[in-house]
Image (cartoon, rainbow, N blue to C red):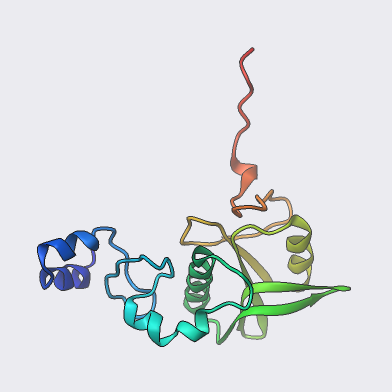
Length: 167
């Protein structure tokens, strides 16, 4: 476990320490959190950035958390400018991209959760790199056209083997 995490827990009372038993850290300040709001932010960071994380569309807190994880991933990759919920033109359609980052003139997109295959194919052709961050994961994977992606959760379904029924 993280030494900073243990140091903060040592100052808490016994009942408070059980609340922090999940071992989750705030995405911004790396302080242990009780993640009741499912955003990945501690109480202080959530209140200070609450306007930034409110979505114009009706999104779940899990999807907002995935977008924060995707933004942190793009920062680790060295992206300079990171935008969330960008309206992105593809041919004759417009798509809303969850998170996009720019690195040395390249556009790197992270699509959070599930997405339609048609959207992924069109976005893949117009950007330099496309990553998918499925629900329940902390690390996105690189999208390739031959991969089958679940439109609900975003997991790679081409890796799963099909089990036949025994008759």
